[in-house]
Length: 423
Ligand code: SF4
Image (cartoon, rainbow, N blue to C red; front, top):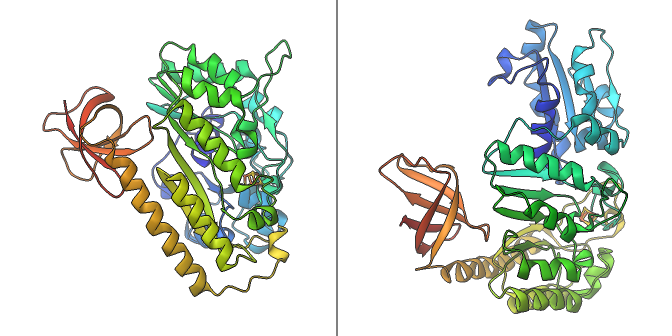
């Protein structure tokens, strides 16, 4: 979402400013920030400190901090770091042009949750497009998981209108986009309306997007198990443009921990969703997130997570040690685990998840599949791309590739990617 937000910020200021490649050439430095991990704010302060020479040399240089750290830290940022000129929360980017044009020395603090105005002012015309492009369709979250800061930094759930999203997708497709990745903190809670005020869900929106002729692939992230409805599950079977991939964070396999996390589903309910999906699309790539060492996690809770992982067999996963976030409920629960114990658990989980990833990728060996090219690889004649199962893929070609997609025969499955050969 930060990639998308950064592109939208650049588009918002494109009438008066152009992108430069070095801070040395800049009249304005926009720092987009993420608050999902602990210590994010510290990193931002140290980055800004590096601009002190530039500020001394160029009295007109503006340093603006945007994103979730700005939202969470608020005025404290201005007090702590005098180099910052303004701070702008994630729902106020529409005001960036005015802030940049403001010649007074006023330090702006824009932290309201004004997502409706933001999206309407940013508009649907896009300057930045690539074969796979992002569109935020939903922002904010009403779930209040006990470990998460998103409801405080991004605000309540808001869904953009169907027409707005479709127009933006068309604008991207005109510029060469063939795959849209729909984004939302809780993307499958999407409940946008048409102009005539009729509401639809994510499945309804995907059906509308699939009508765009030039659009070949659609995917969405990140989903919540509670919002995984039958419309969406069935669409995976019937809509050929919808990628056979689902990122569905489970976080833990222990019902006790899921309850303390306020996730509002049980491991059994999660398993049932996966079973339903696999009945419709047997080789669907299931990806997930895990938090290890959540406060109160016993050995038994952890074993329940391992058991769930062994039963489901994930194609990809992201796993982390629990990280405390100030202001969240979980921050008030005591944690008796040492860092070493958390490390050991994380390693054990990751070993199983990595094996599962390779096992899943091995099922592609010998298959011929289409790959969207994302760019050059590390070697001169190497290219990298992604499959519709969202696997990274690498191949070589001695001739330069003109097209943005190729067909490959998969030769082998490595730890983090598939190796293919041009057909
Ligand atoms: S559903 Fe996701 S974004 Fe919302 S509170 Fe839970 S973890 Fe955070």
